Image 1 (cartoon, rainbow, N blue to C red):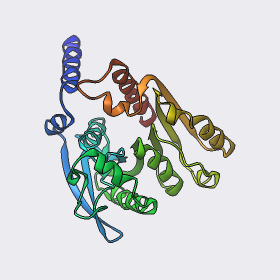
Image 2 (tube, rainbow, N blue to C red; image 1 turned 180 degrees about the vertical axis):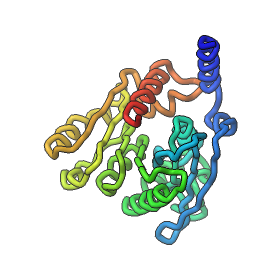
Image 3 (tube, one colour; image 1 turned 90 degrees about the vertical axis):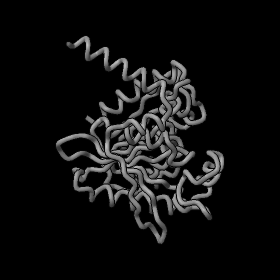
Image 4 (cartoon, rainbow, N blue to C red; image 1 turned 45 degrees about the horizontal axis):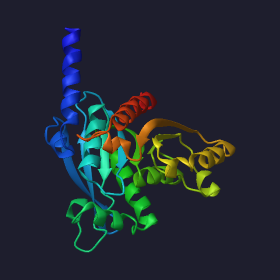
Amino acid sequence: MKSLTTLLSILISISAFSQTDLEVLEQSPRHHEWVELESNGKTLHNFIVYPEVSDKAKVFIVIHENRGLNDWARRFADELAEKGFIAVAPDLLSNSSEGISKTSDFENSDAARNAIYNLDSQQVMSDLDTAFEYAKSIDAGTGEVSVIGFCWGGSQSFKYATHNSDLEEALVFYGTAPKDMEELAKIEIPVYGFYGGNDARVNSTIPETEDKMNKLGKFYSYNIYEGGGHGFMRSGAQPDASEDNKEAREKAWKDLLKVLK
């Protein structure tokens, strides 16, 4: 019986790697919904996923990459819920451009990326505050809220740690830290980093970040996954993923769950 369960698990894993992000989402048994929140006079769209559990669950704010809240970002939110957590994924491109309600309205990912870098940093923090207050209020949640982000979202996750001391922890996937010591000094929660070995642009900033966090007496722990490239959590989940990115993704998931449990 145990061997049959193991075989089924392997088959499910292989099947997931052969599917697109949207196909994985469409076949998910978990409850998905869109929630609209008012944030500084605009509508902030949020993709919410609930785990299939009997008890209340911890909540995560999921911050997308510089491509916006695309299918992969929503897939990750669903995968997080599969592990037993509630995921709140705000679309930080909500109503950020004329005629654009959310990420899916952009003509392509390049257009979304250009819009990301035109966002006002204070508006981003305000939108995350709005998502945080909603996350705290979810009846099925424990009231504990953490933040996790990827690429651009990883940097925003680190920055949000300087802004909101009521978070449980910040999880930063291949994102850079704020450079200002005064900003880092505001951090009162643990920060965990997850980086690909083949990502010199981001990894070259780690020693300085580690030095500053140590001098300030702040908790900063990280793992580097050799062979993994920038964005390995996304690219490692795709049908054409390299073995290195697949392996980096699998190891990072294990390390992430160790931190959380």
